Length: 399
Image 1 (cartoon, rainbow, N blue to C red):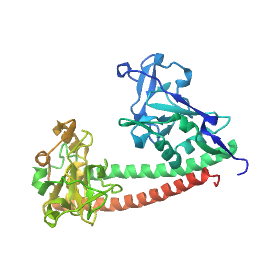
Image 2 (spheres, rainbow, N blue to C red):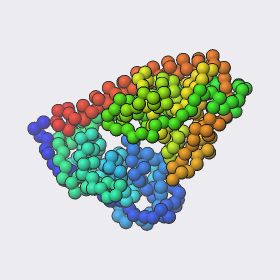
Image 3 (cartoon, helix red, strand yellow):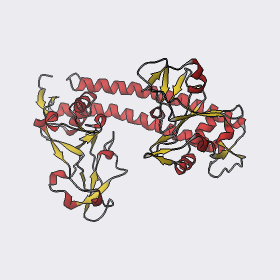
């Protein structure tokens, strides 16, 4: 578009630094004379207001340090891969400022539509540039504000900016709805377990009580060998188990194993893997292996292989209930700052033992649900690809 201009970010927006305070200065949100205080934890795809700190209004030295609708909250001091991550600030329920590890990018609305600026700043290309600008100090990377302000963006007239922002918003809304549907399917998976077997905390159907160990053929630790970028077998690690009890195979490493180690360190379809060490809230992440290819598993995982009288899908479903997770958190021991549970402790957990026929019916219902989830994930992948393409075209003047 011939009327579009290439301008410096600093010509159409400014960065504002956050307020400084000490941990002892934090007060409950809603305290008289206080303001909310956003921090890096709040910077998610959508602003996360589930855990907002508050401090006295006195820490806000300048009015510009109060958040306004249309601001862009930016993580400016964080681990390398999170520097530059940003959230749109909607209308907030209470006055709020922001701390020292985040900054605000504020648009000059007579020059740039704030929503257009947000879409540009949060785009894949801009985010990659921001990370490359990071200035590392120890384990923290700091956003290079000066280099950011010198970034060049393609800027059409304001009406065109609003049109482009609206298109990207609509495309992103479709992605959000698909993610929400997937989250609801995760909840349905938990609900199917409760409907089939009853609440594991109360065992209302009166099944015999046994232990996890009685359901198993074996429980074993993974290999302590280091993995690498190449090798015969992919290696499952604790980060491959998601919070929702599934495997994410997007980041794999590899290793070679001697023939004599295959039985001990390879997983089979139906094996249940348990994360035995991590921070307290992540210990106990459990997933059932449904792949057909052989894969190794690392030493921070425990492989639970059920016997012929029990279905692994039931064991995996139980380990992912809120009841089981409460038990696991109570069993954790701290070792060098990390929570830890060993194989013996896992096997001692008590649970109901429903008939194998009912366990099999549960597996069949979960299988049908997983097919639906696979379709939704494929749809989300297509929407992500579409959104990425629209972003690329939008900021090249091709949309």
